Amino acid sequence: MQIIDAQIHLWAGESAPPHHWRAPYTVETALRDMDEAGVDRAVNCPAIWDADANDYAVEAAERHPERFATLGWFPLDEAADESLVDAWLDRPGMLGLRFVLAAPEAADRLASGGLDRLWAAADRRGVAVGLMVLPPYLPAVGDIAARYPRMRLMIDHLACNPFQRLPEAAAHLDALLALARHPNIGVKATGVPSMAREPYPFADTHDVLRQVFDAFGAERMFWGTDITRLHCSWREAVTMFTEELPWLRGRDLELVMGRAVADWIGWR
Image (cartoon, rainbow, N blue to C red; front, side, top):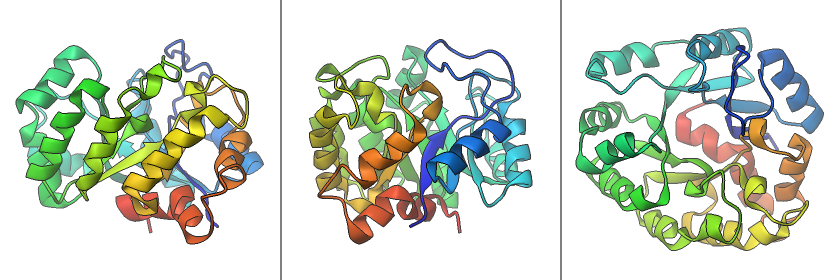
């Protein structure tokens, strides 16, 4: 079984937000940690707090194309036109895009149609787009998915606030599950240990995971870590899924642990 982490951040600069406590997180460190944990590949979402992270992502993918692929980002300003999407996707290892739309101004643009030009460009190319959004904006994500059915959306961290723990962290679960009716929406089961109140194997999160699995299926639920903000080991994040969820076995386990996200972003 090939194990692919659906979301990590690589960056070489010294700065990072306080909740990403492993700083910097370089290619060399990631490869060492992946090898120790038995992780074959990782989807790099370049750190938004490091201006050089996109270039560093290209370097990582060029040096280790069998280990890293990228969902890149660019500023969503007036210069973010269709030609920029093309230029971005032409970069080595760039298999899609990913944007953080958690700040009120960015989230309002999501809901108001202010980013429709971006969705249209992604839809015409049939590419994957990752989104970090907060629960109040999940209905807007559903509306976008319906209007742009060729764009493959990926919702970060089950749309959970990274600063909340259960049960508050999953209070929006019904709104997330409602999005499963859109076949072009998948969810990253990333950062899950951070919402747990219990120690490994984080049993208080297992029912949430089962409900997401039942709604989206193995083809649209992607295991991952966001490892730089977890306080467990990468290996524990793996075995939580591979050994501690008795309902996740066989082909379903292979899909959730890597094959599904590779198919979703076109990483052959």
